[in-house]
Amino acid sequence: MAGQGARSAPEPRTLRRTAPPPEAAKANLVDLAYEAIKRAVLENTYPPGYQAGEVEIARQLDMSRTPVHEAMARLQEEGFVRILPKRGIVVLGLSPDDIDQIYDVISALEGAAGARIAALPKAERTRIARKLEGHTAAMSAALAAGDRIAWAQADKAFHDALAADCRNGRLSRIVGTVTDQLHRARMFTLNLRPLPTHSAVEHQALTDAILAGDAEAADRAARAHRQQARDQLLPLLRQLNLSNL
Amino acid sequence: MAGQGARSAPEPRTLRRTAPPPEAAKANLVDLAYEAIKRAVLENTYPPGYQAGEVEIARQLDMSRTPVHEAMARLQEEGFVRILPKRGIVVLGLSPDDIDQIYDVISALEGAAGARIAALPKAERTRIARKLEGHTAAMSAALAAGDRIAWAQADKAFHDALAADCRNGRLSRIVGTVTDQLHRARMFTLNLRPLPTHSAVEHQALTDAILAGDAEAADRAARAHRQQARDQLLPLLRQLNLSNL
DNA sequence: GCGCGCCAACTTGCATGCAAGAATAAATGC
DNA sequence: GCATTTATTCTTGCATGCAAGTTGGCGCGC
Image (cartoon, rainbow over all chains, first blue to last red; front, side, top):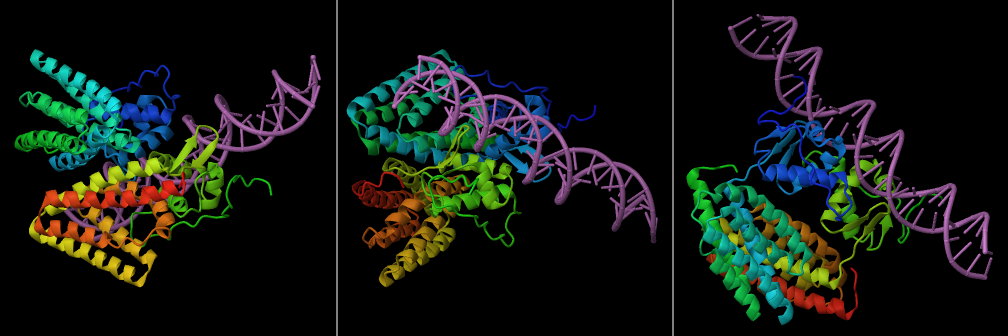
């Protein structure tokens, strides 16, 4: 077998490009490659340590090296891969320290997002709070049903909405990319830890602060929530000695 | 004059590439282009609204379109330019709303940085605090001498150190790119506003909190400082009707 | 004179060619 | 048998070629 350059993982022969989105931004190959590769990393199709060359990945995606090259530059910028000067591309893992750092960034920014939402006019912030409450309710329901996957999805929906609705595009985008990096670690530990029963309570505290228009309290609630999650996740990772997710 | 594609600004015939850094990361053209273009934007060589094609810029930098293309993708990601699908590249300005958003991000993250530094072991945080005090002293000196440029440089040095020394690489990088965006607006208003005499006091409050190891207070001080700056800058911009810096 | 449509000149997106750098394997001297 | 050097093969970085898309102008019909 000649040019199959994969070196450290069961090699996927092809990578699924995301189904051409119905009416989204016109497809350009760079974004396609970016999304596909990122998903492959997040879903562990490319596990940490996976190493390959641009040609290999380009072949899997059925395109030329150029868009893959540009997508990789972006993914390196965001911390998913590392481009070794003339040796190839390696998928990075997250050390507990990395996760600690990410949580610092997220809690600070989600705090700001919460404060911003709480400072919106009453009609707006009420509408957003209702939406958030919907997600929290979905979490509780999933929790009651013991469905961890659904719980995680509802939790993600809550946080996505928090970031997206704060009327600060830069903040939203930063939170988005940083949150993505946590995905793999959270998924991995989802089945290892007790179901976080009081997440819903913390979400509700944040929602209440927003409803009350108390920016300061919203800030505190959002940050406390993330720090709580970190304090639960990190010891688990360190204890299991999962040094690289 | 035939192919000079500039449409809205006095055209620079060439763009200076940064002097090849002595021993830094090996020069690759993409980074060179990125730095040169970014500097051109920040220093108003490419003012907001400036529009040009990749070929034009590539010619100015004496390289091919490829590295310029990739650098532009990065600059778009960071909000400096907008790539119009098949029509060219336009340099973006900052509206007061943009500046408001940026300050939200920065104050949240610098707060986290301050808290992180304050939580370091005493020896470390003392060393950092001394450095910060040095910058603050330089600010006061420049202020006394009426040298606004020197003041701005010392202020920048203070904030750069704050972000760089917090032991959180992601946070540092995000703060760095976001701060850069403010540069043009701050420079523009530097001569319009009264010299901020109590910046030094606020810096000292932050430094004191770090020395005392009080993360909570450091967080508050850092955020208050940025919000103060915002509250001073924004009304000025709105009043002068500078809708696009 | 006015509106409509076609054409030409630009633009970027992507594929490919070429060369330089880095690692590995081979071959040689000892 | 071992160390050192050399050659081979991979890798990316960048230049360039080509095609598709968009814009603006020119001419034609009315």
